Image (cartoon, rainbow, N blue to C red; front, side, top):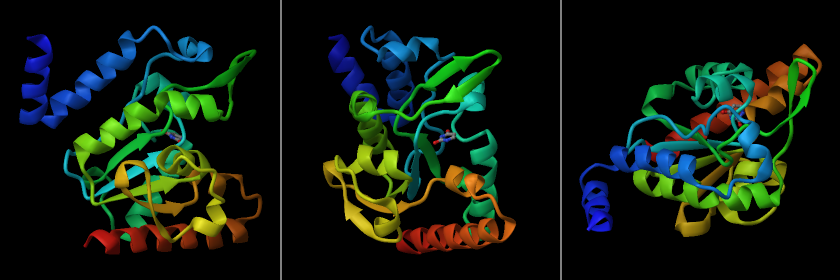
Length: 210
Ligand code: URA
């Protein structure tokens, strides 16, 4: 009976089902062993039915503490790029491939660790269910981890960027770089050039759903 009620709720209100997804992840006893070091799972944010759904890699230090995606340095850069592309961030759904912050504790700093294939596989059902509930027109993969999570393949980001690929579950996936890539470029000129290119990618994604 409980299962049937869940189905009814899901049919009525996908945002309830999204909240349930977080509860379900919280209650799972089979997380990757590093995940229990994180403060909390971070799921997506944004309206159900958003035409664009963005997928990053994993929550970072600030996201882990606040429990919200893309609120740290990469998120601020993402917001600036969205503004420059004329796309309101609140109209988009923003989430990550991996739902916990994976890090190496080093003294007082928590050093970001890249998720591996097993981590991507573990969180994939949650990502795909999120996408199913939001039902966007286009999914934007920000970087290699997102692209791997969404397609099941290790595709080179630089070759795939700007193109639309059919992902697992038949979603249309638009590939681009991760905003952290822009933060790692050492010189200002290169940063400005790559920022402009990222903005062009976002505009192109926006045009696909206009
Ligand atoms: N980087 C990501 O991939 N996701 C976040 O939420 C923050 C930083």
